[in-house]
Length: 245
Ligand SMILES: [Fe+2]
Image (cartoon, rainbow, N blue to C red; front, side, top):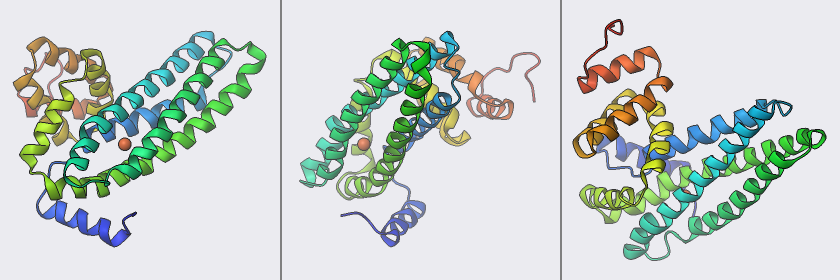
């Protein structure tokens, strides 16, 4: 049953008083950013510019692949953990995941059709893709809020933070490097400075040095100068000449 605003406020108050590990927080910020940015890119796309059309359709397909992979991670790791201790609690959103799978297939077909369409049909197909993607993004924003309230309530009631961290580590270990880079590209710029520094500190401690460097280089262009300066300070990175603040 959907939580009411009082129950959601209680969870928020408990989380503020004694923060628990929120497995959804970072990746959902990445998804919200990737979805919003891609939707806006489709809306402003010049369909008469072949290169821009190809790049934007590619981005839509990349986003949809990322969403599909995310559904798989939640089904396999989060829902399994919930069902193990509280049977039935993941069923409602598992059904929504099945709907999202169908939406993803339809939107991917729309992007592919737009890419192959003759110039005279591109405008109408682009408008249809834009509005259908907007509805998909809207559904997903609401869906993620239910996960971060109702699903987290189940997870926090039955698992310690250490156990949740184990689930998270097992999930992350299944993600191939290219997908990790895409997740970092959309997650890190849209975290708060403290969250960004925490994710990168953890990565520096556990990932190979070249992977850490590659992520830093991929993310820097998407940060403002003040954000980059804060990150450099937080991580104690050497500051290149001319970049001091
Ligand atoms: Fe989900």
